Length: 327
Ligand SMILES: Cc1ncc(C[n+]2csc(CCOP(=O)(O)OP(=O)(O)O)c2C)c(N)n1
Ligand SMILES: [Mg+2]
Image (cartoon, rainbow, N blue to C red; front, top):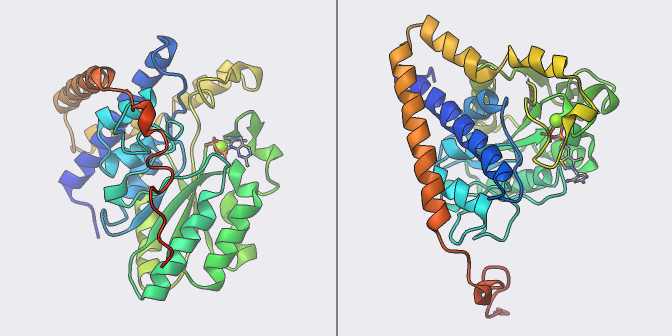
């Protein structure tokens, strides 16, 4: 389905809002107001492009920790995100039990994931198997970093989905590093998409800084999955513009010149320029969106700061069942 003008503008807004929220998270960390942040800066175009290709509320999303723009586009509010950073009560991920950025959103069928990388992939295949057994036509979109595709879990999950022709789209967000390990020390192929052929699937490689290229590829994979034609592996190439996390000093493994070079391919700036060139947005509209994003982020921080912490007495409540029924 071709995207409407309004959808395209909404997608750009999701990128912009996520970027400004993500930047504020770094500030909150440096102010000592949050303990940890892991950033999606530089990956927003692929994330928004991919998530617009699934049907919200019907399909499943099994994301990984960099997917802030995905979960914002799936309906997580800025204040919910900031509450999760601050470990405040009633944040939707886990009520403050889970690490920040281990997103979930129950009402939008966004599944929570564990800290060991790649464990989300078998979960995605498992959901795919459930859909197939139930005769449903939902699709599962799952994401992963390129480094984590070296983990056995990813191969097992893709292999299983390929054998059983499950409705799963495996999207690899290749940001060139796995913490300090560059891609060439992580895999002997140039793209994780090349790994797909060994598992019986075509692998598709796209420019992860182009929201619409990613949308087209994922939309086709989703349509195939929905029609029972099985899974796909798509790799979107991009660059992690920030350190790995708020605990990482990336000066120890990459030059400042390299980072500056990739800033020229910042997807937010490239999409902004494309929108203005194609007449989808004026400079004035862009400036208004910037004002709106700043206001929303300010309000989210204010709201989350005032929100209460979970009560100590509730610590075990959502973790252990109060009553176990053996029927
Ligand atoms: C099984 C396991 N090993 C190591 C780690 C520590 N770790 C967390 S993120 C990460 C890097 C993952 O890199 P990549 O898959 O490329 O994703 P990116 O962080 O670059 O988005 C590592 C090694 C972990 N969480 N789980
Ligand atoms: Mg990576």
